[in-house]
Length: 260
Ligand code: NAD
Image 1 (cartoon, helix red, strand yellow):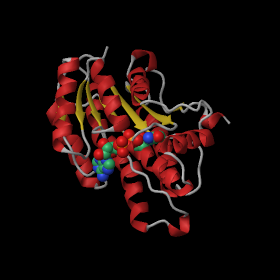
Image 2 (cartoon, helix red, strand yellow):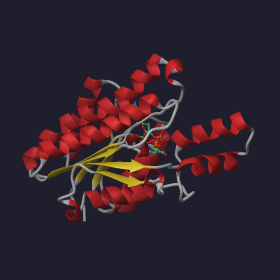
Image 3 (cartoon, rainbow, N blue to C red):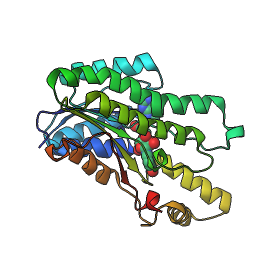
Image 4 (cartoon, rainbow, N blue to C red):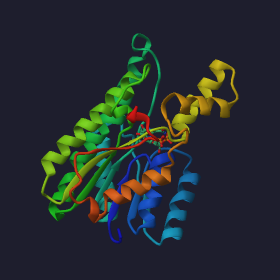
């Protein structure tokens, strides 16, 4: 279904981004994976995508908290793939603290990566999509792009910003063959969330699995984690013809989190 499409997925050396890259590749897209991590592990993932799905997979990376590096990264990825059809802005980080205790450098880093990199990446990729009259921008926001939680000021501000930026991207590209949508996951058991589970376990003297259940119970009525593969499936749908008229939306996949 996505044969010949060229997809760039930021933050795809682990977690949700890797799940999305694998799902896009399983539908025939060539992919650029990116992000930090152990070079041997990244190379293993890259090769396994190529072998399993018979597509091209490349690793191109940069520190996306840097505006110029982010724009350069998209240029490099486009050169490597021979263009860009699909951009998944996924890279993100978290830090929790009350507003008055929130370290300034953590605020700056979260806004830079979780929000500004989405802007810079989109700005660099849109000219490629406009030239060919087809494109898909999928921004991985969060349930926290729609509702708030205490101690997550930077993350909630950035993710609400991503939902707004997605709407503007959709309006500026409407009718051009390009769509822009945000995906709003609830809890997904990646390293980003594992850290929060470990913190609950430590603070409340719980076993890790009991802390995971407590985390779910607080927000996610299904009491089940969303998986990277399920999110990949949603991205594949957004890249399909069925979603040609779906643009500017914030699509929830959160086990009912924002329904209550
Ligand atoms: P993760 O920690 O597993 O993956 C984050 C990815 O971003 C990694 O590939 C990492 O190397 C990369 N990255 C980190 N800093 C970077 C930088 N400065 N420059 C470039 N790449 C960088 O986290 P995840 O849970 O898979 O999160 C992916 C996205 O999904 C994030 O935007 C996150 O906010 C969002 N999200 C996660 C959850 C969840 O429950 N895990 C829920 C909703 C939304």
